Image 1: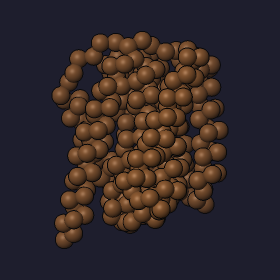
Image 2 (image 1 turned 120 degrees about the horizontal axis):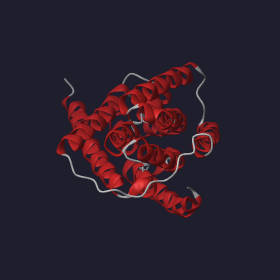
Image 3 (image 1 turned 90 degrees about the vertical axis):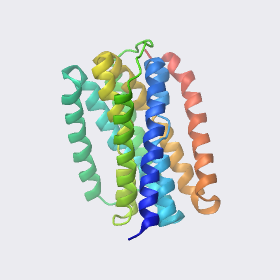
Length: 263
């Protein structure tokens, strides 16, 4: 039995679950605009790539990172469907969104792998179109911050779910090629838990408004993935991740200026 691998799986589960729960809780306290930005910071993907790199090596982690843009394009479809259907209830919207994610994942797995450049271009085009749909036909508008009562049950469930996603992606990397692992590693754990909880607790309008901001601000994950795809090899997992995360944070800081024009 590979006890080292099992230890890494457990550690990835704990770290990812705690991180996602804390950042999601903070996002919910700060309103739809700032909350959407925080929820879009690289979180699950950071822990996933680091632990995949520890288990399979820098090269495999870099190849996995290069596939993340296609995974995020799939997430764009997931998020747009949730925004459009949130008014029908949290669980119905979650179910329809997950079906969308699964269908798009299967589709891209059947197609030839897309490189980092083409994948990023497809992601940018798809995300822009999705944002325009949310902004105009759906007419989603921003909602100010609201008071939020802390719930240990919500915190624990979100931590368990997000940790499970990361551990599953790390385990999958042992049997799946980097391209498929990259798509799976981008599974919208934060989006699913955040949108479901916000719809239940704060209503469909607040959830949709947060989701609209996430549509454009989750481009920070593409910045992180692109940087790590190039930096993991020469700089290693730790420094490559640190620079990638710094680049994503700077990207989101610039987005704060853009958000002043978003309703």
